Amino acid sequence: MKIAVLPGDGIGSEIMAQALRVLDRLGLPIERQEAPVGGAGYDAAGDPLPEATLALAREADAILFGAVGGWKYDTLPRAKRPEQAILGLRKHLGLFANLRPAQVYEELAGASALKPEVVAGLDILILRELTGDIYFGQPRGIQTIADGQREGFDTMRYTESEIRRIAHTGFQAAMKRGRKLCSVDKANVLETSQLWRDVVIEVAREYPQVELSHMYVDNCAMQLVRAPKQFDVIVTGNMFGDILSDEASMLTGSIGMLPSASLDANNKGLYEPIHGSAPDIAGKDIANPLATILSAAMMLRYSLDQAAAADRIEAAVKTVLKQGYRTADIHEAGAKKVGTREMGDAVVAAL
Ligand code: IPM
Ligand code: MG
Image (cartoon, rainbow, N blue to C red; front, top):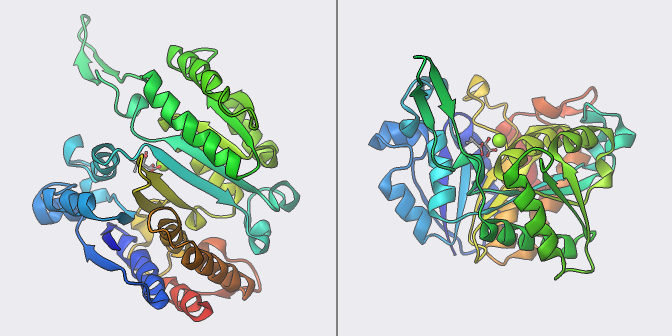
């Protein structure tokens, strides 16, 4: 098994170091190679996604990714900004299916901003389409129009094959879980969403065992905080999924807990925490490494066919939470407050 390790920027290298220690502890024959990406890629090679990094990602069986972004890169032209690295990897590698599970650990039900009874036992999966939509649609730009003022524009577009493929992933995921799929769109306003809904309904005929519902994205944003346990799998487009998955993360207590997988048609994948590079806390040894550690578990499960090892990591994370270890983002009175490295120590010890 060969993995590409792309720590990226900000807290990226700190959280990645802990995930690698956890992987090492499993003693699996995993060969790994590291490369710079994001701001680090720009610093090393003048490009957020250096050619060598992309080549490494292409040839690996899976990619473990930290986070990208930092203030010092915010004023670069868009093509050189760190975010282009992750967008480029998704597009170049055809990673169209983004799995963002939001699970509330028993011990953390009190850490959510919502009442414990609203979130206790929550286990939902947000499935976000990742290589289409307004993120990649052409044309886009900023132009000067007739009256001399500037106008910004982006294009939301989806082909039916793109919708069909993510819909299949959604139904298949639902089959393995609670057999409920909620497709989220804005079909009351957008043509793209009307096609999305029509195609999802067509695909549904192949999955009679799955209960399909449709919801407008604004209502879904509200329902996620009102009664999140009504959902099993949510399937949605790129931009809606970006927003809803950040929202869903807070149901679990902290965005520092949520892993993700971005898969291609053959289950090759890129694995990353859903949080960002958090430049404000970089280098302080306080970031929560659990989302990255759980991303490594997803990598073992989905791309490397090592389900037993993935189970072991997930069980170890539950153990450390039970033992009361908490990084600052999930800290509560009476818990053992630990830093990034100590949290890694605790997971390794639990393994
Ligand atoms: C995410 C992030 C990215 C996105 C950014 C960093 C480009 O917010 O993975 O959710 O918008 O997809
Ligand atoms: Mg996001």
